[in-house]
Image (cartoon, rainbow, N blue to C red):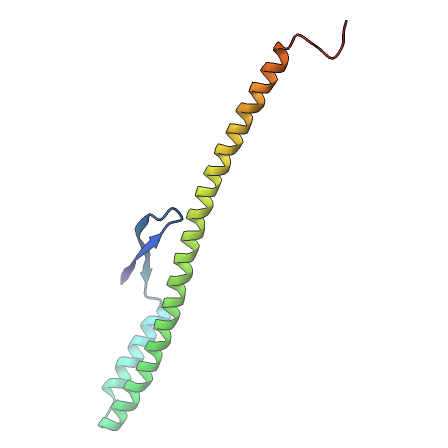
Length: 120
């Protein structure tokens, strides 16, 4: 079973992008955990046993949610950092191109100058 998680990113320039993280697949470990949890629920003979199993499952679910939120936040921050880096690289390229054009202009002006360093 595969699934994706939708997310919205605020880029460096303030633009909001909708992206998807994934696709993700259930691992063999996740399938094992689901199977054993279903078996534990099915084996319950009383409400007390069911409450204990449900409490353990709830604690496990809460831990997974915390981990998922941390991974999502890290992923979003990474994407934002990469978007900022891309914009910074474009700005730097524009500055370098402008500086190159100015240097070329000064070189042409110096070639046209009537005075040279050597009088002969």
